[in-house]
Length: 177
Image (cartoon, rainbow, N blue to C red; front, side, top):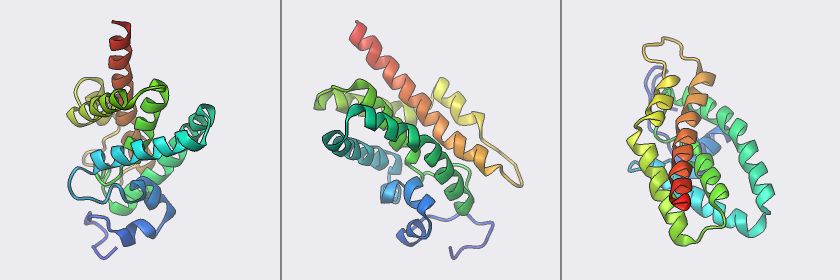
């Protein structure tokens, strides 16, 4: 970390590999691209889910998702603190866990259904309207001289979990119709 203590910076591979929390929060490198890291992180989540489906039972995937939430909270909190930004765009673990939850709950689903789930999730995550906007602002700490990093880490995860809920709501309404 070559920047001064008060200056936020763009993470690098070196930064990511300097702490296990960074590897997790940055989606094992999927959050490092400058352009659309959230989309890249969600694509990585999709690929990782396909791999998990091949080797793990659905109940085991559910446990992986459940364990990934507190581990992600820790990783996002530590990484945000080290980056000195309350909600850095490079942190994509929130997209990863939330999209795993979507895919796990819509399974079995073919490629088209998964692609629609991907599009809906990215829409809700990026547009941030309604409940997603509310969740995104709930844990923001504007003007705080010493942010509560655990609170920030939870906030990083929360808006994507709400985006996942909105995605699942649309899919459920479509299936019911």
